[in-house]
Length: 413
Image (cartoon, rainbow, N blue to C red; front, side, top):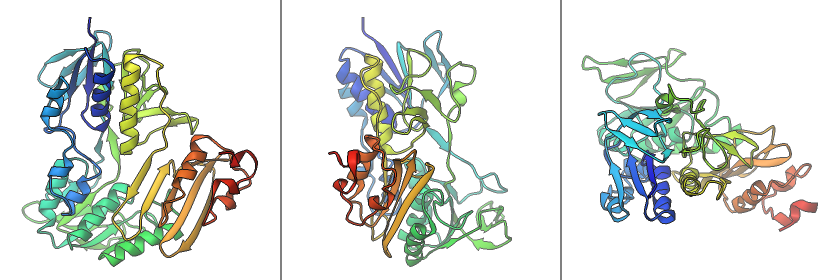
């Protein structure tokens, strides 16, 4: 008798799981339920579309024939509203019930709303879906001035979109530096200068107290907590995600900010797995629970979850994620958990070259590279193999660092 697999979510985690399930279990019944109105697209490239650098075609990854060819039932515009682990069913918003033998929750998150007056006005955008990118691109083409809020990786995408569309911009940040939890002032200033060169002005120790609107409820001004006013007929907000855990209420599936899974992506229910942004997984490298929204991490989690749905214990999730920024004349890459650790080491080599490594218990747990990305393979190897680099921090940030520069066991290849 064939197994029935239900996947909630058609992002890269859900779609990768479906592809792997079909490879691992050719006779299985596979159903994907997604509340979006289109099949899998590339979240990494939607920023290039919004910047006007790419047409729509390369953004879509799967059309509906991809699912038909693999005998996967794709249900678009289907919001799952209830999970019954005991009955092995999920229920959609229209009352349709789907039975499963194994369930994968790849349900991701929703952009966090800014809790200030008029934050729902026309002209205020969040940046998460392909449709968001379409709306941003259309509005940006007529905008005269902009404000971006959110000093993180999605915020910098919004700032770059305004720059690419030649819209004068202000980038309001709560602290004194962009992504201040991962970059020191030296590293952040490289980003600040690149923004200024593109007519986007970073504004520090700022944020938004409220928005002002016109008679038609269109945003006109952002007012920060200092009382400063910034004209804006376009506003982009990227202050994080609210993970879609509301669907878990009333169940005994364990979760906090995300769904708890083990190293095989299984929840506390034998037949329920999770993958992607929504997971709080046991990070075998970090040695504690972690969340990671990077595309590569989500894809790998979907693949690993599927293998273990078919045969539990087959393969564990061990991954060093990466996130790159391609908006500037120099490359930028973060990897692992650059905001964590109990120690760090950094070095600046030029106006556009800098690196920083986050260290926990004498081992690398993440880092940021600006300008020269060539050391990333070496750092990731040390991180994956959990090599103790205690006492050798300065060696790690030599500009021409090689693994053999480390002493003792750290130098083993």
